[in-house]
Length: 473
Ligand SMILES: Cc1ncc(COP(=O)(O)O)c(C=O)c1O
Image (cartoon, rainbow, N blue to C red; front, top):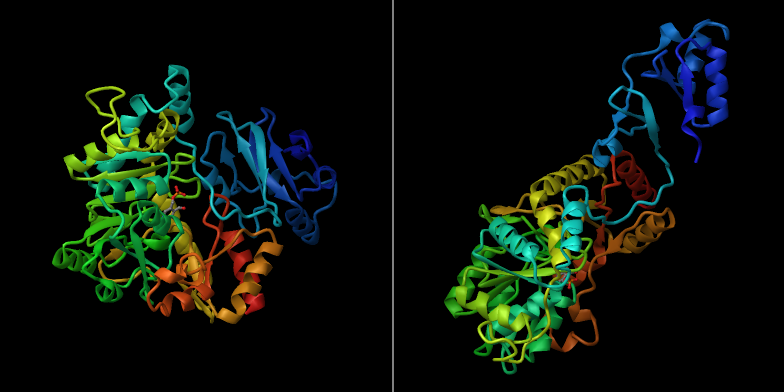
């Protein structure tokens, strides 16, 4: 990496000096400092060109041409805020200390890799993690477990939280606690991650796969109703890609048919249906805190519930089925589905900032909407369905089925991480036998793309992604 000094020039320098500085650093930019070393301006090769065209000579001083209107960042600024300062014109940003002395800089690389997702760990995550580490409570006992369970369940509007080793174990724990097993049927949507259906299969129950709604991509309540048999015990609505399911209808159907709702909220932390957060509708609701989720603990999950009885049952099942009163006396055949105190420490810090993280995600999705607006052949995920407040998990679009894979290849070729939508469960050999007629899911799945929704994405990269998509379309 180039040394910082090669970018710095005195405000007493001549136009020629600044040109030589820019020539040496090959960054097209010089940071101009005064006698005390404080940053007073930035001059680019474009500025120099304009000065020469206006008739100034190489020996003229730059001092009177330094604009006070320049972009810089302060040491300790949030990296997202810094990234957002980049634009077509601003490619390099000086970072100054409290005395305005340049201590570092960040440059924008046009060909930089754009990740699909990235955890935001710049709050108290490191501090709490170290605290848990030095406390030596690094397994599944410790104050952060309780703090995380309480703060996250409270955030979702539920009474109890039971932290688990991941989202899949959360789903399995929930279904087991509800007594679901062989002979029972559980309704799941065709578009979801495999963990949803696998958790049902682990219990010995039979999954029943139903179609999705065309406008929301979530499980279709009409299809749920058609799939109910005397053996149906539960429905797992999955709030896919941040979009809440139609919980009004699903709750009505569940109540009428005396079915449990186990919400799969892995992709929709903080989303709302009718001003109520997802996770507050299910008798038990499950979350994942995998690294690409809205908030993360690395690996991790949680079941939330309002039922004291289910809370207690899940705690016993999570810990090998061991009695809570009598150590090493096992009441049921349980599992080791515990989360560690270190993971919970990260989670506790993440919950502190969840609203901020969601706000940033929403803004990013808005930027995508603005930049993609009007491109014929690209449909952004619906954010305007009555009663539903989606969150931006992975910004998702539909394109023509014939073009989808070409677009994916083009973006990947250019180092942009993208994902095709989930393959419908009904199209996979191991699950096909559980599926009812699923038409919409197959169509949507072949059109869908998840776009980068990471810290490093900014206006520039969205523009880049747009241009690549347009070049294919
Ligand atoms: C809809 C859905 N359900 C369940 C899971 C499983 O979560 P985990 O990966 O934490 O086991 C995921 C996560 O990837 C998911 O997207």
